[in-house]
Image (cartoon, rainbow, N blue to C red; front, side, top):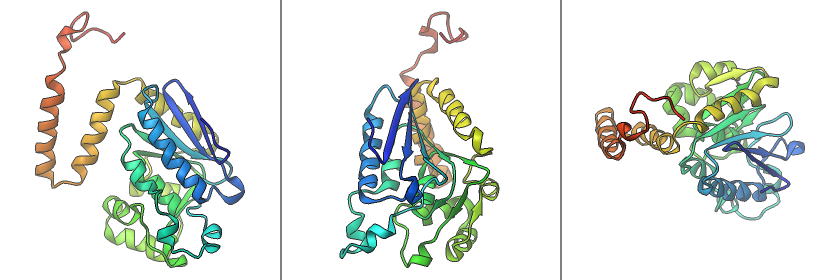
Amino acid sequence: MSDDALLVDIANHVAILRLNRPQALNALDRALRLALVRTLGDLDRDETVRVIVLTGVGRAFCAGLDVRELATSQASVTEDIAGADLGGAIAALRKPIIAAVNGPAVTGGFEIALACDIVLAAESAYFADTHVQVGLLPGWGLSQRLSRIVGPGTAKEISLTARRVTAGEAAALGFVTRVVPGDDLLAETLELASRIAAASPAAVAAIKALIDDGFGKPFADALEHERTVSRTFNGAVSLGRRSGGPNAEPS
């Protein structure tokens, strides 16, 4: 499953998606947006895939929407990007998705990274929200996800100034999980993905959903939600029925 602008490799239950428009800093033209949404859905339904890794080819992760393409259209930006809600497509995944941010993640690229479950970044990577510079508003979740992670004041400062946030600062602010040397980025990301892929797929999907669903609720409601889901899920599991009992080594 490959497209010239979106490369897909699957091995050992891990799918690697590479945005492959390096000459345009992996900017998202309409064809790439639609291919990415379609491919994410396909991978989520593929039972051989347990974890998805998203990265870019070349020196950038993603420069956001392809503004050159949009400038040639007579339609509104809303009309142009209809049918390819990347933030929603990523959020809808049952399986974990890890962003390996190999370079600049700008505007829509920033939104995509924030939508992923885990973000690893190369030391040379940076993040920037340039919506104010092009006169647009984010629509893939940037304003809401960023403010919930870093607080509304810091989110406003980042978005209203369109300044660059280094990988190190992003880690300190909490929206990057780990900063690694660029040459080690993919290897470390795949090592992390492999550890997740080796776990129970049902438990991984359920815990991911628990965290995501609970994050949008008041704390007391989130605790009750965890208790309710846990009772149902754990009610179908008996460790004692496994060969060797609950203390047996996994096979």
